[in-house]
Image (cartoon, rainbow, N blue to C red; front, side, top):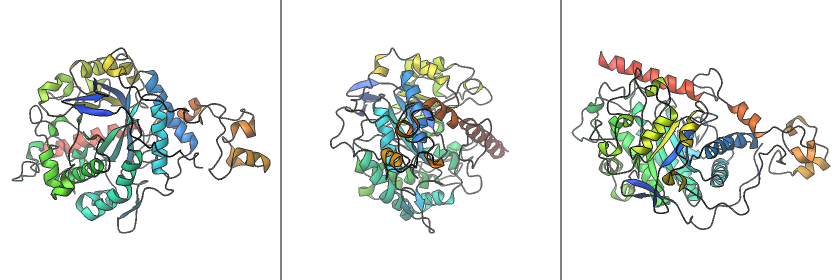
Length: 467
């Protein structure tokens, strides 16, 4: 069943928004630190669109509530991921629709409006390069006409529809594209020369058919340019797997410079907005030790980049040299990074303690959004009155004697069930918690299983390439 339809988007841009100020991020002109977390997903690649149920929205909203209570101000949320659920491809691999029911954008807007009331900025991640098995999405890298079909049919309408939502922090084009790149390939153009990434593990997701760096940069640059054309004030980033691909100083090379992105896109008119507004790197310890160039061993200034630099993924414990959430968030904050997003709100709830440790800092609490008046209707309380679909009201279902039907369970709780058969947000979230064990291809693939799979695949690839 579909949730109640969202009201139309605001008619005017928000009075305050996230911007870039020199090498920092700023909110309404004041430098800020993005203290937050990866939601990543509750249903892998299927949290938005395809007729999202109210129960699922409530489970997603509960992560917002928990983040807000911990003093967090931002969240990284995955969208298409590998493209199995959204967008819709035809038999030729051309993108023809946002999703099967046309609810993708309205579902995203509804979530943004819930985030607005909690002073949380949302950063939507479009794609995932760390695990990429869907051939339709791989074709978007190699075939510009197919990528254009996605940009024209989904990306531009989505960006235009949501650009004035106050809680939209920005767009992350792809998570860890280096997982799918062809590493150790010489090229006279330094932007496409991946020999600096030899034996680093880059390319772990595509051991037989890796994607040339030029195609990766074109994929990123074309979507960044489209976002900036549709919404010039929007911020765009990429979730780079490591500083090794994002810094000329401590890393191997920064492949995401304006020059590299615009060169890959080609045509001057199309490449005008092909840029990243801030950089983002992920950092996981290898065999219990951080890489010597890890951001958790350096200050932001050491990387000598020209844009704000944020630590977009990290975990606790052995994969962080035994550091606690408070230590990791505190390091990122005290060493002038633009923000920190732990992995993830569901798999490591102790991350909230790290966010809570920064609540008293002015550059964290400065992110305050103007709340909607009146606020969006509460459809997630223990006694909400959400209809089973958007065609018929709860009053009609009562009048027609349909309250006892199996498909009415959990809906019209006040009108039909006297609030005695309604699930609370707590039980909804518990139902969505990651399972004890899950594997690739399951809709509930857990964050822990996913990250373990990526790390194992990366290590195996690194071992093979070092032979």
